[in-house]
Image (cartoon, rainbow, N blue to C red; front, side):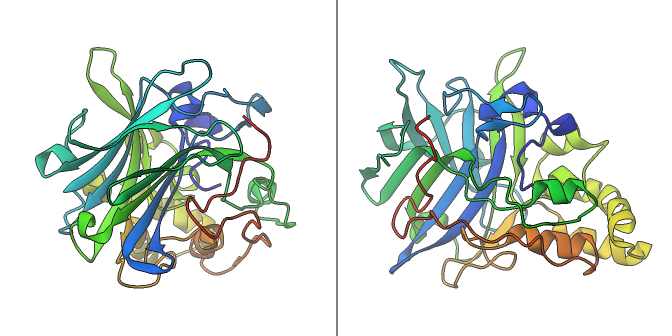
Length: 326
């Protein structure tokens, strides 16, 4: 799995499928090197515990969805894009996107300048795209672009090439931005979802960037990890190293070294170079799970025999239409 089902025992964080962050992508706009595409996927359409579909409402109207951007290498956000969804009316939702800078980008709470307002959310196969100045925006149900043999992963990495996600949907947030709005040539990105706190304000329900590692390498510290920040990820190195010793047979010092390459949990991205995970951003066809299992097993297993999905689009929003109308 990528970051799907990342709550305890493969449940949804805080029991809400709409707050389950699944994947983050960043790549240059095809045919226009002056812009980049950022994709934040959330809300898997299938509940593995209940063995059935999740709620048809794509996004939580009482939640916040954020893409955080570090421009100076300290793993603290200097820029953020924040998406808030209006409550569903007659089966419809709309979205507002804000851009935050400086101290606001690193905080928790609603703020920033509105860059997209009242954008319709796509509930079915039609991709409703909103253009606002230099930005383009999409949000709604899509075919899940992540590909992985989940049953093989659960069966001691005995892969058969059965792609669990081939017929699954996910909710995508797709934002096309001018590179000038990213703040630097070399940036680091991560995503998070937030929900109202019991005593007011906002609390972080989920966060991540690099695929699979939070689901597979984090166990006892899961709640702390999901609520944490990349700037504090050094505290998870011992736990990652211990897991790598077990899964890959790494010697202890080498396990610690490799763990430090996986943390802090963010994607590095330079829009001036072609995107390719894990070195620069992530495209929809990068085999991120193969990359992870190769690291996890110390090269003993290099593939799960599953490849990219064939329903991807060649134009915005790039993610394929949902398999069935939500």
